[in-house]
Structures are given as C-alpha cells and as structure tokens.
Image (cartoon, rainbow, N blue to C red; front, side, top):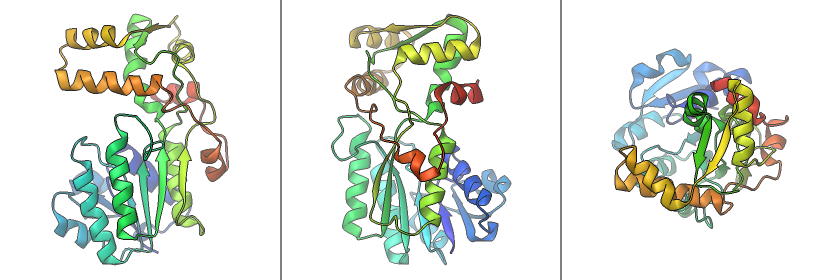
Length: 281
C-alpha cells in the first residue's frame, strides 16, 4: 500500500507521517505531498510536489497511490476549491481509501469554520470515494498564543463565556489518521474526534497557570468588548468579525462534545490539557 499525505509540511501532516513511520510503515510507501518540496526533505519519506491550484501536480503525486489523506487546507475561503481539486484527482486515480480531516459536526454546526468542511464532505460523497471522515475538534496547540500572552499578562481573555472545548494534542489526531489508514473496516465511517475532557476557559487559565508558574485568570468578554479589543490591536474588520464569530460558536457549545471515540481509535487516553500546553510552552 502506498499512502499520499497532502499538506505534509504542515504541523498535522508532519505528525501523520511520523505516526505512520512509528507503526512500521516502509518510508518508501509514504509520499509527502508539498507545495515546497524542499521543506519536506527532512521527513524521511518520498516527496512529491503537490499544489492545490495546479491539478497536474496532484495527478502526478497520486501515481501508484492506494490511500490518500487530505489534510484540510489552511486558506479560509479557498479551501472548497482546493479540496475539490484533490477529490477529483483521487476519483480519477481510483484510490481505495480517502481520509479527510474535517470539523466537529461539520454538516450541522453553526461554527464559522464549518461551511467549507460541510461542502468538502458533500463533494467527497458526490464523488463516491471510499472515504473516512475524521471530524477533528480543536488542537491544544491552538492555544500557544494564549499561553504566551498569559505568561506575560496573567490573563486569558476571550468571548467564549462558559463554552467548553474538547481539545487534544495534534499528535493524538495524527495517530487516529494512521490508525484508520492502516486498519480495515473504517471506510464509510464518520468519526467525531475530541479529547477525553471538555474544559472551559477558567480551567484553561488554571492549566496555563500551572505551566507558566504564575497566577492566570480568565476574563470573559462580551462580543462587543472582544471586537473593540481586537480593533484596538490593529486587526482588520474581516478578521475581527471572524474571531468574534468563532468565539460565539464555542460559547454556543460547538466544541463541547466528547464521547471517547478518539481515545478508542488510538488505544490510549488523549493528552491532558496541562500536558499538551506544557509541550508547547
């Protein structure tokens, strides 16, 4: 079996490849798809140029590939077209397993990020691909900036109210990708993946306090207060609106669900919040 991982030089892509190698996959059976192949030289596997905006590179990277991991793109607003190019190429290549990293409850969620994932899932279904959908909750690494600011200010400020987040470390999610790639029986499944514990921002502040060694408190902001603070920091109106909407989704519970599916897939508990934060401190 030959596996192609898109976005291989990104944070998640690198960890997926590392997890496959840890499970004994032959490095020559893994293809790292990257827009800049030089950045993939240290991965220890085969490398192929893969640019979402250049379909010919996708088709070439898929030559001889049995399984494909589409790590969702990072360019918000452009992802559906980028993903569609990969989906069409995968269908033409006749891949036997197509794994996509989606968002929590992508087809029903009010989360501002969900629509592009919903559209991608619909394209995968319409193409009739033998797919496994992994709906990843938040990565604990998403809070690196909050950790850094809180180390200086002693404050975590957000507009999430008492909303909870079932985060896990990227390595946990990467291991889940490796599992569904290498095991039989997952095609056709959609898995909601999250950490074992859904925490609120008061608990996030306490965890950061433990990591940085100083008192840290959570300051709950209204949407108006948050918007004003972001504007005063120099962010443009579009970015301000996006961040405020994102926090509103968290406040509404979009990231709160956890049922242990991720832990069951990887065969161990997910990485606790404090441990995950300590790894990025």
